[in-house]
Length: 300
Figure 1 (cartoon, rainbow, N blue to C red):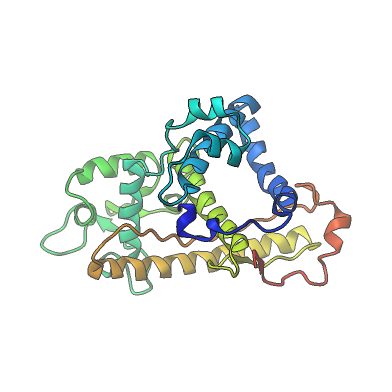
Figure 2 (cartoon, rainbow, N blue to C red):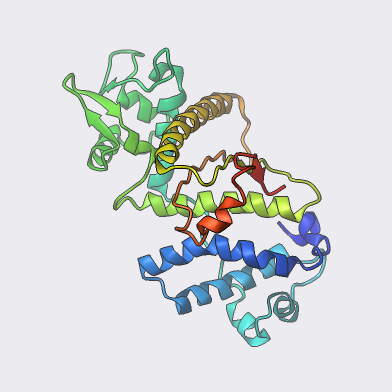
């Protein structure tokens, strides 16, 4: 979004940079932990941040009908003008999902949503490899999404990735692993970037504008027993999956009448549980929230 087209054009809130320091430190802590665990050093991260600061200032904060100069990008970012000139035009991080990720997501979404591939409870049917006529099959499922990839190739890949199993009746069953990329599955890195981007973008938009634009809320309780935390986590998983499946069914069915365009929508849910002192929140700091734990919270 360019500054001319939205809230970014408004003057910053007084002392916004100072107010951002503490939440930003908390937000970045698990990402720094992930960087260290994954072998990304501070110099590599610093270089990435320099490129991003220049790219965002160049494209998202351009003034209407005015050329975005190296001097203005330098003023916005605090990066030396010579360094800005070197980094401008380097390109932004790729937003597109890898082809394999897009295909897998689209086929699974249809399997979970289309009436011909679900039972009376809305659960995905076990599908034969092929079937006569219009009877549902795995071949028909894949063909309803793409004609460019053979269903057998998709099946072989999914069996290898443990997204499906083949039962005693030689039917293909979708398993829970299909919802959660793990292990050596490279799609987990794509979803890390996409989902965190969208969550942070929603929260940032909410604190930047005069009123929250996006729904971004959480229910939270502190100072509870580990046993209760695990029980609440398990129950919230059930509630979350029900919500996601319902949203997927409605969106997938609406696609049939949609004319298409450039808009994008993402409905996400997260669940997190930890010991109070695992992330720098000592027991003493957690006590303060005990009486009002469970209040709906967010960026508002």
